Image (cartoon, rainbow, N blue to C red):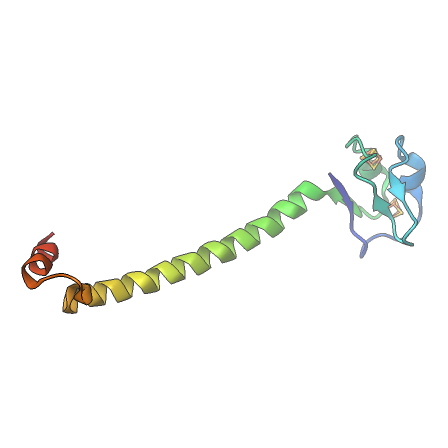
Amino acid sequence: MFYVREELCIGCGLCIRMCPEGAFDLSSGKVQIDDSKCTDCGLCIDFCPRNAIITGVFVLDLDRLRKDMKNIKRKVDLLSKRLTILHQRRKTDCFGLEPRPLCALRKML
Ligand code: SF4
Ligand code: SF4
């Protein structure tokens, strides 16, 4: 998957002329690549004078990685809080659910 970085593109149109598949689209006023036509040949990357075209996979992976890391951190924080609470309860009344002997036995495990 190829991707045009708008902030770098100067609209020279070289990529549009070079693409053998006619995969570039200018209908929105910006240079965009139509994924359904692009064959990932990489020709446009070589000709862009601004290095504005990159493989989208790498960008998407980084974005996804950041999101995944945030989610993992959130889950670890949540789990850590729950474990702390459980640990405190177990220390004090063994959740208040079990008879005393069973509770004592559990504490020994
Ligand atoms: S990778 Fe090839 S087919 Fe895809 S937009 Fe670039 S030049 Fe066109
Ligand atoms: S060649 Fe590069 S700078 Fe020129 S229009 Fe295409 S993406 Fe933009």
